[in-house]
Image 1 (cartoon, rainbow, N blue to C red):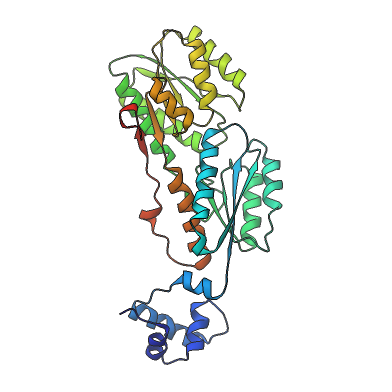
Image 2: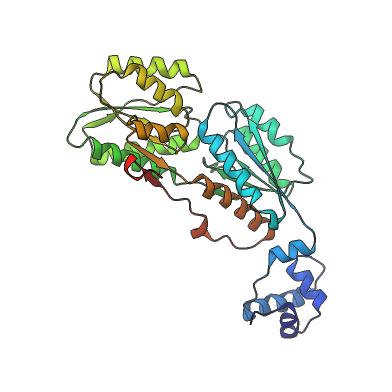
Length: 341
C-alpha cells in the first residue's frame, strides 16, 4: 500500500498543513519541522502524484518551443511532433505554443525570446545557435523563474536546464564509420555540407567525423565544410565545382538541414558519378531519396521522442522532481532502404 500524506504527518509528528507546505516548497515552515517531514518522506518512500496535485490546484503549464524558420523539412517534422505530443498531454494541463525565428540572426532570436510573457511562462525549448546575445537572453528567462531546455543543438555555455537531443559528436563518428565502411579500401575525398557551422550540432558532428576518418580511414579526406545558409543556388554551385575540381570525390556527408537543395543539386550535377551519400534526419525528402537510391544511409533521431522528452523534462523541472535520464536519452538510429520504416 502506498504511503499517504497522513502517514507522513504521523511519522513526522506534525500537522497535515505542515506536510502540505513542505511538499509544496513553501518557506513558512520551521526548519526542524521541515526536516522531520523530509525524513519521513525518505523513510516511507513517499512519491508525490504531481499530476493529481496540479489538477487539484487547477494549475496549467505554459511552454513555448522556439524553432528555426525557413525551408526545412526536419523542422517541419519537429513542429508536427511537438503539436502531436502537446495534444496527447491534455491530462497534464499544458498549453504549448510553437514560435518560429530567423535562427541566422541573433538579434531576431533575442527579440523573440524577450517577447515571451515571462509572467506566465513556465518553460521554453529552443532550437537556435548559441551566441553571446542568446546566452544573455537565456539568463534573462531563467532569472524570471522559467526553465530553458536546448533542443537538437546544445547550448553548453548558456546554463540551460537540460539538453534534448542525440550526442552529436557520436553522430559525426557514426557518419565517419558508415562512410569508411561503404568506401572500404578506397581513397579519395568527402564533401561535407551543412546549413551553418554556427550551430553546435554541426560543429560537434564535424569533430566526430574527423576523428574517425583520421583514426580508422586515413585514405579518406574530408574537405572543408561548405555552408550554404538556406541558399539553394549556393549548394548547386558548390557541388558542381566540387565534382569538377575533385575527381577523387567519393562521398557527400550532409551534416544538417538543407537536404532538399543538396539532393536536387546532386541529381543535377553528379551525372554517372557514383557518390556515397550519408545525411541526417528522416523526412519525406530523405525517405524518398533512400527509396530512389540517392542516399545510402540516414542518421536519425526520433522527433516524437524529442518532443515528448522536452515536455517531460520541462514538467519535471517545474515540479522539482527527478528526471529519468535513461528515459530521456535520445538514441542514434541508422536507417537504410533495407530497414526503412
